[in-house]
Length: 116
Length: 112
Image 1 (cartoon, each protein chain N blue to C red):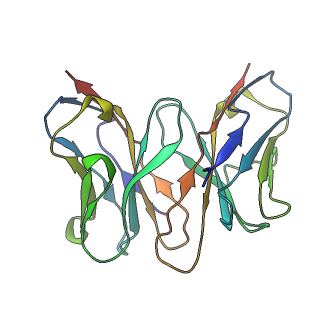
Image 2 (cartoon, helix red, strand yellow; image 1 turned 45 degrees about the horizontal axis):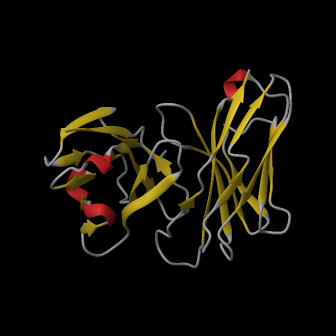
């Protein structure tokens, strides 16, 4: 179990540029989540996948944001035309949903985005 | 909507003293309840969780939490604080969809 892996860990970009983050979940975990965390706040849900299907998107996920999980394994989160308000830590998490109650969700170390 | 309240963004505790972090949720339906810890520049690590059964839950690093349905609470405690407990602590809930909703967190400072 190598844990949830995210890269890059840090990204500084100019306003208006596109950025992409990658997440490799714990192997065999069928559910993958993206959260956003700003300073002094708890993580906020963005979206999640069950295998390759994107099942829910938060209204925080504007049309500049797109997430994919093409083969049901790794996932990418792309932000187009970045704005300063996008500066945050983007957390990926995964879990094995097997019908049991309250499955544990495991988080990666996050990808910090700074838009200048 | 799921709502989690954690009062007091910063909590100072003396080394060796009791750590008490309060968490209340707003729902008539008991959720699944979680406490996560986040060290600087790191992701979140699960401390403990309540799903069903015994309402007193023991977690890692000597922490425990008690689910009280009548008070809609899930407060986190540790009898004796250690310097290594300095971190940010988040309470979270889910309602079976396995999607977590987090509180704003408590930044714990341990005073030597």
